[in-house]
Image (tube, rainbow over all chains, first blue to last red):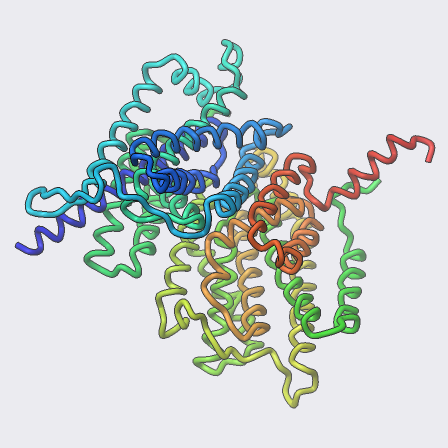
Amino acid sequence: MADRTVLLQLLFSGFGTGGVYALVAVGFSVVYKSTGAVNFAQGEWTMLGGMTTATLAALHLPPALACMIAVPLVGLVGLMSERLAVAPLRIPTPMAITLLTIGIGLATRGAAMLTLGKQPMGYDGFSGNAVVQIAGIRVPAQTLWVLAIAAGFLLLAQLFFSRSVPGKALRALAADRDAAALVGIEPGRGVMWCFALGAFAGGLAGAIVTPLTFISYDQGAALGFKGFSAAILGGLGSLPGAALGGIVLGVAEALAAGTLSSQFKDAIAFAILLLVLFLRPNGLLGRADTSRL
Amino acid sequence: MSSPHSAGRTGLLLAWIALLALPFLAPNEHVLFLGIQFLINLILLASLNTLMGWAGQISLCHAGFFGLGAYASGIASTKAGVSPWLGLALAAMVAGLIAAAVGRPALRLKGHTLAMATLGLNSILSVLFTQLVPLTGGPNGLLGVPPLSLPDDVLTTAWSTFLAAWIATGIVLLALLNLIQSRLGRALGAIAFNETAAAAAGIDASQLKLQVFVLTAGMAGLAGGLYVHANQYVSPETSGTSVSVLLVAMVAIGGWGRYWGAVPAALVMTLSPEFLQEAQDAELLLFGVLMISVLLFFPGGLVAVPGAISRVCARLLPNA
């Protein structure tokens, strides 16, 4: 039954990368919902999370602690980016914010290269290099960590947005900016927290995937685009959609690489994206935006 | 009073003729080559600026169309012996055709669909350029592409390449100017102002956007065709998604939605590698900070800076 084990192996690695894409997709969705802008800095924050965690781990900090320091730091970078570059914008149109995030992304990548270096970095993972036997296949323990952390984060995010007062305030802001402002929700503050949350989610994704893939300063854009695709696949703005989109993309990529050709796996992943975009423009789980005149 | 958007045909004609002085003034081939590069960048950025500024759409595949043009003309001339001059037309056509195939379903929908679809398209193209090794030369690039030379060597290759780029630039800039000043351009303005109202007035928004998208993609393909013969080489890095993002950034820095905005953008894009060569490691950071500063302090882009300065001067010296 070699075929079955190979398939299982591919599925597991697909779920692992899928979980990472899902986190990046959440970051995209949060900023998109609050500003209407496509955030080109998202991938750079993901890269920053991985690079910072690896740098701290190289200083002999335990990997979990390194991650717990690095990820909030990346969240802070997102918050500061919003304060310094987006908040002063006089007319915050989605197009202007989108263009600004390109600048933020370039600056972040440049700063990461200058301070953290050009070498690809990695660290051993939360359980070292341990490998776990599941159903006859060998899975790196870090893959299980990735799945658990991604699932946990998505669950917490879902609770945050559906139960807590600040989460509901952010949703109100996304639904109707002016009406939210009338009931005392400050739009500027909301956008700031959304940038921080987006950067936090991206940084977390980068931090937990680095033991599996290594990371260098120039890999952010590629990760960002994958996360963006996952967000669109699932439906921008929907948390279960982000999870589904990430898993679908990750599994499709792994299956394409394992069974068809590893050189063309990215092309296949993006071909799926185009297909979904044309057949279901609002994503697999997204609802159509209704607009009133 | 002339509006900041006004751009006369006379001004364009004069600027275009003035550009012809460049090969005479260029002290060496390197500077002439920079001039050719500037014209190629100008075609790329002016077409993208029109798509962004007048059709309100972001294409994240402009570098991909550039690459399509470069590889189409490069492969046709190296593998099939097609004349490079014919290759230029082929370059524009291939890019336009692919743009039409992807643009048609994407532009039926409102919002960011085109940005997303073009991002996916560029990613697929990058993979194809890198992996179809027998055709494209793979990561090493396509080598030995013939230059744009004239029969019997009437002119040196550098001269004939410059002339080709110069004529192409003139055609593209005039076409874009005509486009934005025509009925089509006014219809695009109406769509940008209120798409529903424009539709009620009988304007088919998605059809118009598709036409502009295909036209500008064809122009990017033409720029790619010029590039591959000027360099006699093309590699996949010149047409990746990150270059497409950079092009969007350049348009924003120059002044998107302003006809002349592409000129400072093309200047920055052509000259910044020259000036930042020593500070190579800081280039990205400088670039990002420059871009944020321009967007925050000069929302109209670099092209609006002289106007802004003269307004400040007029306020400070009311009687001057």
